[in-house]
Length: 86
Image (cartoon, rainbow, N blue to C red; front, side, top):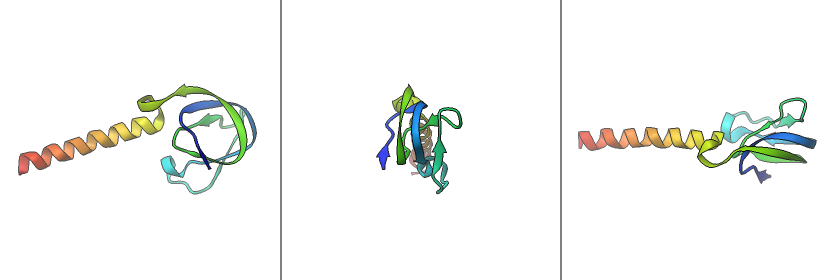
């Protein structure tokens, strides 16, 4: 259940299975391999296996960072609407 802290591309893997439900809502574990579906996303969990990746994005530039930024922007708009009504 290790949490991936950054987005990256898998360059070496050994029977790697990832739980991407935090981002996709899909409950099935996704098999990852360097030659097939090598993208690893921050906020997901390693369920089986091991691997090495090249980091491509961290923080607000990662997929989970972009989602949180968009959710935060939507939350700010909701607060603005409440302030104008109140």
